Length: 205
Image (tube, one colour):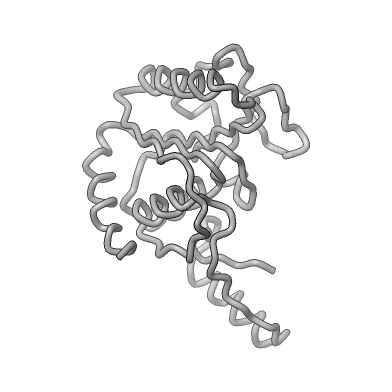
């Protein structure tokens, strides 16, 4: 059993603590803390820690591209940026099956609700992993993608960086990326994003 309090987006911290204490008392399991990040590149791991103020694990020395972080003016601007960045990624000879779009919202409520395709590929909203399509751009809510991973994550609708829930949802979304991470947030949240980054810098010292 793997437990991570930083991904506890479905219940309260009190519920998490109660469950952990119950398991320890009743079953007396062997407990080991995992301290090495074997999923993310150093760039993704460091940016995740800075943005969410969640201390990083010891990162493996795997280097990758810098994280792309972009504010957008409105839904139309978000869609423009997403088309440009996905087009650039595919234009470099990369595979569509490596891409996953994550949002905290169902697609109908997201900033790309009016889009059915990007760069000629259908957007496939996945509610069950058995319905993943390799020749489409698969779209998940952050909540449904918890525990999974993708080579490239396009994290959209990042509408907050301040509250504990914002930080946990962002942590789950960002830490799903293995190689490349793109982040998009409303321009009105730019100051909140900047403050989060400044606050989190001390974690990397």
